[in-house]
Image 1 (spheres, rainbow, N blue to C red):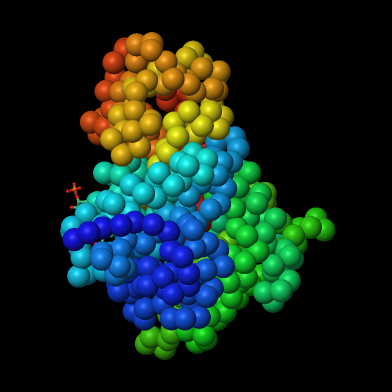
Image 2 (image 1 turned 180 degrees about the horizontal axis):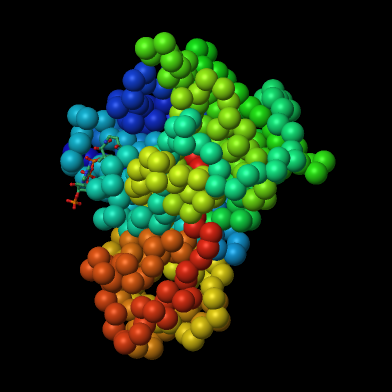
Length: 402
Ligand SMILES: CC(C)(COP(=O)(O)OP(=O)(O)OC[C@H]1O[C@@H](n2cnc3c(N)ncnc32)[C@H](O)[C@@H]1OP(=O)(O)O)[C@@H](O)C(=O)NCCC(=O)NCCS
């Protein structure tokens, strides 16, 4: 096999590269979907693997900013990664990951992020599990709040055109409040979040805005799935996104969703473990919650990434980073007063790039990494010191798989 990896040059190559992952979807992406996709994934960010001129794999990186503790940084949002089944396990993915990370680095994006189809794939490329996300289901009989909510807002249905004005500022507020939120372009809103796809015609997306104190302070996007079993409703309300800019707004938008009549259950995916619902509800024990890995983070440039987030005050910390894939990161780095630079000083901790990626957003403590044998504490108390610096609340939350 003679393998070459380079960005695609035109729409025809783009289609064949995206269709590597298309081999695993049904239906595979058609022409319309590819046209839409090309609106947020530029050709130069879609790498293809060629074997003697034939495209055998593809890997994209969406160019967006991502919120990090105390700010935001350019990030490659890794997506549509696939290898044609005819060429599996011959190093095609590895060749694409190498080239993509070099490209992300060359563009000055200090971070890469992804959602993993399988948890076993990306650790070897320096990605770490940096946030937790879960599917949450509340049944009608257990949807009551612990404290009575004095409702002050007004919820109303809106059409996509109006939602395009009203919803983005609320998403942007989430990005100011939490790490792990990627910036959405207008095309993203129109073509991904606010579109009503034909295949959802039976249960179309519904859009509601919450007005509170004269401003739009929350929204929800949801679908309902009708059902009746044994004479009683078994309908489900599936929330795609429900956000409020303030605690009152979040409580109100959830009260609305939990009160829609006929719904036997309300479900939402990707909820973080510190979602307000766990304390708003009177019976959190009755909530079904299945938590797993959420966003995976890759520190592509240690100096820029670590200098680009905020920390608690504390003494300097020296990290010995092992990075076989992005070898420019390999070595010792000193974090002092929020700046991270190369150093010759003796290290406090030694860890792989994937463990650093896991710790980066503040959700995974260094102590937990140590207990999982994922880092070495080289100086007494260094783990506790690192945790005081890096810990961040609220936890990261990325409410959409990209
Ligand atoms: C996952 C996928 C991209 C792997 O491609 P590939 O070209 O077969 O992978 P490579 O041959 O380059 O393997 C690189 C390494 O990853 C490992 N690996 C590859 N796929 C893996 C998987 N699904 N689970 C665990 N390990 C995997 C290989 O064993 C190899 O390990 P090593 O370097 O330690 O020896 C391919 O199987 C695929 O397209 N799967 C379906 C779509 C998908 O899941 N895409 C990812 C979307 S997030």
